[in-house]
Length: 117
Length: 116
Image (cartoon, rainbow over all chains, first blue to last red; front, side, top):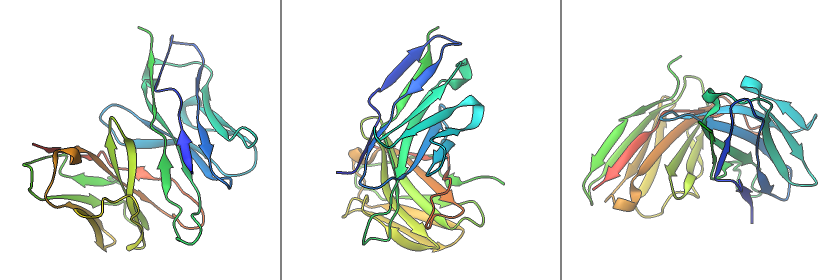
């Protein structure tokens, strides 16, 4: 079955530490891959996306993500986090569904990231 | 650019009543998506339109939910006979081009539906 998995419901680190949020997908073809962020009481905003080319893609605010075809993963990273990075992060995939004309965007359940006070 | 506008921000209905949620996509965007967000289920895809045509409604509960896009400037999500389990934040998003390539989705702030 096609799926997007974010295995960590919550991640907590200290300010200035590095961050990695994990995402695994299960699709027969290489999908479009995205990371979105949702700040409290706001809608979602896209951080970055990948389809082809360099497996490491740069996004806004110092975020980057690395695609691994062998591992079916698209992990998000940031070298040094700040309080303003506290949010819920969603991995999402879009893939053509044969015979339907649809390439809907499917989200993982999200990882809530916060800093240790 | 005001972004994607969703109205109302909050809606409270009694069990069995009807709820209509409105979405105004960003001008010029050709695709509109609807999602439902809850703590337990996360972000659930409901349906999407491309150039006002329904493309995929596989996420819509069959009996009480319906979505329309009568013109390029707005879409509605209607829930008949609302039930407490329909309580959620309903998010609308639009995209400038969602065809062969997957472009950015721009989300509204959502409508929080509470069914008593």
